[in-house]
Image (tube, rainbow, N blue to C red; front, side, top):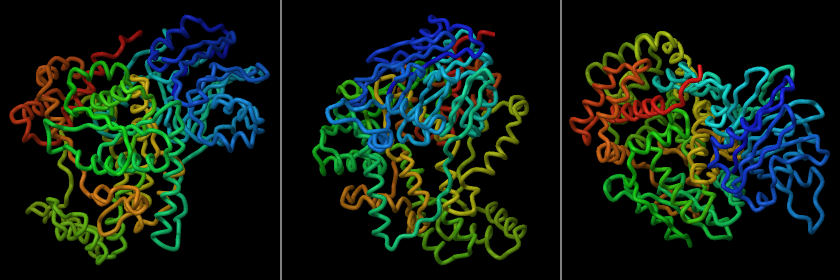
Length: 635
């Protein structure tokens, strides 16, 4: 993993070397192993190196092509190296292995703008093509590597981090009101926008060409819902998943040294860790958080179940040993946004432990929930197709120990999708709800967005658009699953994890977001993913014998709110005072009265507080700290 940056003037003006240096300085944490700049009059490219693969130590970026007409800067890990080397002309025995940067350059020389279609892995890169007087940029299919830019003709500025783009003197620091409104409304409608008016993200699976005619972007790859896969048995599905998932994990073990995995004890991280141990020949380190002060969220029994099955070098941190409030400002300043993560300081502590051990690669189970699917859309599909017996069986399995009983849930589904006219069924459902029928719907969160700001940003219309494309609105489980995986929020989460890890010179890798794994899981029939109300069946069956049964069979998931409450109430700072002090920054966007009342309820009895209030307090803090510590506007 590396850092990239560049400036391109399409009118031929020379690039100021000092401006290019500022772009690298703003994200210098990405380059502990070297930094270099190259200029071609109207174009300047910069590179910050973090050597995480054996071949990376031979890279010298920005790198020129063999004919000196191409210049590349890339943040890339290419997984289909053997396939590319074969297609592009293999090297002779005794030659040093081709670097990933060299493979990208050769791919571009062979296939031009179609070159990203032939690359598998994680990448963001820019190539100056002097023969065509243009800059060509591309980003990997899932958005595993960040690419931020500002296009203001005739100037194009880009960088891995938002901070790099903001460092250019001509880039405005004006806040994007639409993005702030969406954040407060808890919706996400774009894979391109950021919290700054002038700065965008190149969406996953996209490429861009910048030249004297302007900037043109298009998708070279789009995730689509594949045809439903039909295999002869459950065992065949399990074996097929195990093969594709093992390949994804094995590809991500290519490193310049030992590799680590995050191991929380949950199904996702345990699956990555156990599979990595099964396919790895090297030493495998694990990194876990234990919770002495909040034992109700401690997962050590499941962590130990995994560790007892293999030869690991395990490392532990205390999950509450970080000051949640004090850590926010510095972290948000590095991200330049109100983050999606509620408690990023915990991940920072884990990444710090990885760095302290001397590693720079860690495998992360992020995305397992979405990719392997809980099958949340299946009960609705059963009700819509009036398979009432199957629905009862599903609800009886999924609602064990829940506040809502399966008969209550069944009545709600029957009234919505039974043979009664929709108007009558909906009316009866509302009547029953008014007298105490539970439908399992989540408690409404406090509406933090200010009334005037909501009107100005037309947030009501944006909410309607978001609800229409939300997974819950999909008619079938497969469509629901596809919407979860392809959601506009997913690239933002991956970028945030990448940028957070880079602060500790660590590269995170995500096997569940390998396109092969994603497409395989999307192809599965609904009843292969969920049985008797229990989802993620393909992961459970596929890793039989790899995962400990204690972990593989678990259907619960720890609710980490107690550790968040502990963090808010045991900080060196007082949460109520902190929010009061940021009210001036929040006032243009937030209903300050709602924020105050939410905090008041929380501080009266934190341990018994409404979970919705806790979430809202964290949201106010993330936005407030970002607004207070963002760079001053230049306009």
